[in-house]
Image 1: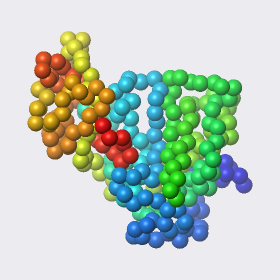
Image 2: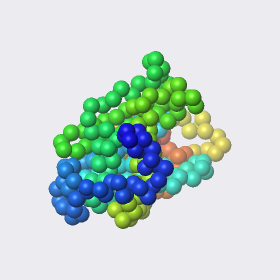
Image 3: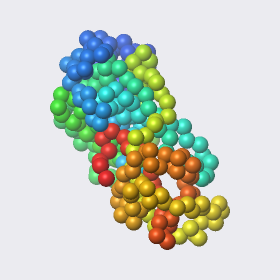
Image 4: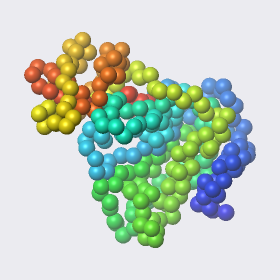
Length: 283
């Protein structure tokens, strides 16, 4: 059985995931080094052990700035994933993010699955056949850090290959099967190893500020509020990236929608905001 067939079998039989991964797994929960099973991982709260996300594609710069990982595991065992988002417009300004936790044993199982999929070695060529590039499609990015090495697997337009498989390759198929498997973390590592999902309580936010003309929005029209000087952040200096402590803006952002704009020195700004997650670059 090759790796591709093995992962396909796992996807088709979720109950088999915990059984196969548990074989030979001697990890111990509560082990500060999280090295059981032979996979050393960081324990720092700001470190990223595992991440699946999407980058680029045909979208606005603000949307790209607040892109969220579909799965993120931090060194201290916290997990992050998108929360429930409604289709109403305007929606909340802040993207919904859930925070949970995963045991040390669960982290070991995630890394072991990556190992079994052949993702802890040389990075394969994930290019589309014959140099094809789907410019408006995002890149799927899988990042795994273990034993002091970070492995980044990046594939453009993964999962939207042509129906006849003409735009696929064995490497792309293998990565797609792995991404599908880890999309359901409880099924992949066992429900006993994950839990505690609840809305994230942010410590800080990252954002971009873009000047806008509120008159360009009519139905519905935007709400313009004053940007508090007490934040210590100047919107005019925040076009690329700015950080602000959650305690200074929690109430303001919680009440804001996608059509809440902020005024500073006679200019009006639209903000793209997201809670600061482990691994995000400092502004």
